[in-house]
Image (cartoon, rainbow, N blue to C red; front, side):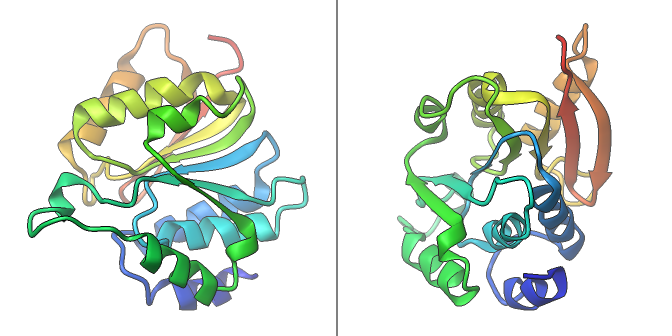
Length: 199
């Protein structure tokens, strides 16, 4: 599925992902040649749709998005009571015609990380619970699973739409000595960086 086609569909789904961010995720998934694609925090499937359309066009054999979420939302989603977004997620992925490209892991992020072996993830997108402790534990749990030169994307780091938890984790990574990331770029509220091949 080409970007314009998936964009027209994904724009109709609820979610805090901007078009430029969706385009970046699509191209990262399409060109990934380092390992599996994993998304932490899927909500109702907007970002998943961009990723899944990208892997559908992937020529390197990585043709599935592993979508990890308990589907109860973050605390900010639960102010008016419990939520469960899995039915909406499945409906949106089906509407996009991308069900075959998505493997749904209904569980918390840290537990899901145990399913994967070291160095077998080529693209990791973190957009789960936005509290600092949660973002930190997500990155720490999944870090060993990302392949050398694999791509790690953090959402909500600003300057557009940034949140304190993800921003703090990004600053920690950028100021860590010795640094363990390289090739850092930004697309709206997302940071995109590669894991160094040697730490």
